[in-house]
Every structure is written in C-alpha cells, then in structure tokens.
Amino acid sequence: MRVIALCNAELSARRASDLIFESLRIPVGPSQVGRKAKLVGERIQEWEKSETAPLGADASVSGAAVDGTGIPVRKQEVADRAGKQEDGSAKTREVKAAAFFNLGPPDKKTGNAQRDPGSAAAAAAIESAAARDADKEPSPFAQRLAREAERRGYGRSGPQFALGDGGAWIWNTVGELFPGAIQILDLYHVLERLSDVAKAVHGRGEMAEALAKRWRGMAEPGRLQPVVNELKSHAPRHAIAGETATYFENNRSRMDYPRYRAAGLPVGSGAVEGACRSVVCERLKKSGMFWSVKGANKILALRCAVESNTFDDFREYWAEKKKRPEEQNWFTPPAQE
Image (cartoon, rainbow, N blue to C red; front, side, top):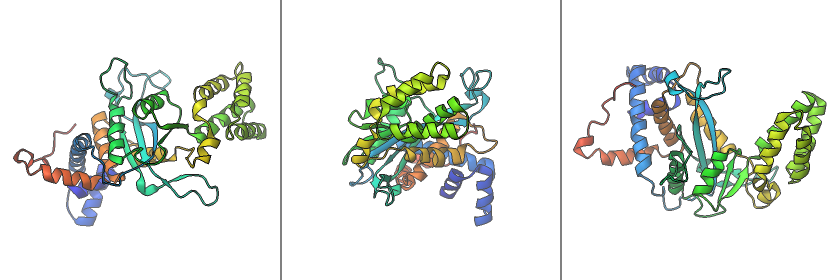
C-alpha cells in the first residue's frame, strides 16, 4: 500500500501501475492504484484534521506564503460557476495553497533572503477561503492554514511574515489568523504588472522595456507614488494602468521593500509558487486529466504529506489506530468515484 500511494502521489495511475510492475513484478491495475492511493489520501485528510500538535519540540518556522492555481475538473464540478471562458463558463477549480518555511543563509551574490528548502511544508486543497462576519468559525481553508501553522510552530521564534500576490482573500485570511505577521506583497508580481502596463502603452519593443525598467527602478526602492501618478495618467486610454494603480494603492502598506530587505526578510513568494508547481501542477495538471473535487483533494492530501515529510508521521498515527478492531480492514478499496 505504501508503494502504491507513493507512486501515485508522483505519477498518474497508469504510469504508477507500470512502474510497480516493472520494478516489483506485482500486477496492480491502474484503477486499483487510483482507488488505493485515494483511500490513503482520505485517511491522511482525517489525520491532518485530528493531529495538530507541533511536529517535534524544535518545530518553528517564521515564514508563510499563500497563493492559488486552477486545475481542470469534470463538467459537473463547474456547473453554474462563472469562469474565464468566452461564454463566461469555467473549466477549472482553484486549489488554494500555502507554504510554511524558515529562512536560510542569504544569497552570497545578492545578499537577498532565501528560504531553507529543508524546512518547507505545504498545505493545499480545493476549498473556500470565504467567511462572513456572522460565521462562528473561520473558512475551511483558514482552518487548514491554522492547523498547519500549529504543526509547524509558525511564529514561535523569529519575525513572523507572510507573502502573497495581492488577492483580497489572501490578506483577509492572513490578517484573521496571524494579525501580528508582517504582510509582504510579492515583488515579482509587482514587476510583472508594470511590464504588462508598459507593453499596453508602447507595445512590445525598446520603449516598453525602457518604461518598465524606469518604473521598476522607482517601485522597488519604495518610491511608489510617482509610479502610481504615471499609471493614473495612462488610465483613460489603458484600463490595465488604472487597475494597476488601484492594486498598488490597496497594497501600499505591503510594499516597503527596503525595510523588508534591511530586516533580512524575503520579498518574493517563490516558496508558495514552488508549492503550487510541485504539489499541484506537476501532478494534477497533466494532459487529459479532469478531476472530481473529492478525488483531487485526496491526492492533494497525499502530495502534501509527501512534500512536507509527514507521510511517516501519518503512518505511525494510522498504525496505532489500526489496533482498534473496527479499523483492521481500512485498506478495503472504497467504491469508485
């Protein structure tokens, strides 16, 4: 079961089936691989919700980054949902993801802060981050973040900080759960937006590149207001310029990059973008894949456990639980979804 789960965590069911047979000469069909891996993922979901104690006495991370990425899903999963297709429909559902990490030694060439790859942990699922004021509990995704933060000792030592791309749901969630965290708008999203506006104003070419470079030269050191003023001057002819100016004004308090660098903090959300890529995209966005929400979340639970080095913690938990008579047959495959 462990081999099946770990293979399917990395590969499609068909490729995992082939690999298991080629390596171990054990015939396990693709459908059986998929069912058993999802069953393990389902059990990991249960473990993830029930076990929130810190993972070791020295568990302590100071950084968090939050983002989202879409994955292709079955038609019934997007029925009546608005999307980006020409007819206003949707083909994808958003996986919300977070990465927790510590800082490692600064880059030797630039002196910029770098994350410690060995400290990274991921949390991801297709679930809501929305919560109303009248709700008694945080949103499902906020609860997921809170559990992972508790396991990782987020903010137990060092400056607590959080990075994001400017999405309102990100800052609402971070502000609700971690009010003391320093919020940092990912600098690379800022630079990308400035490049897009420059191209809208001048088209692709040297003039656009020069304008984007000049804007970046002001925004990165913290001279934001002149950039905002210029963006607004282009807004009557280019909507993207006005949208970017508003984006900067809404995130002004999160764009003090000189201060962050002086404090040894990162200004880019590469940690969560890496999580989106390695945990989500490399497994769930392969050609021809269309997921159910339940199925995707089970595989995501499995992927996160593997990527965060908690799969063995889960196995210990379940080995203990299986001592109960009612849990002896938990490997029995569930009905196919």
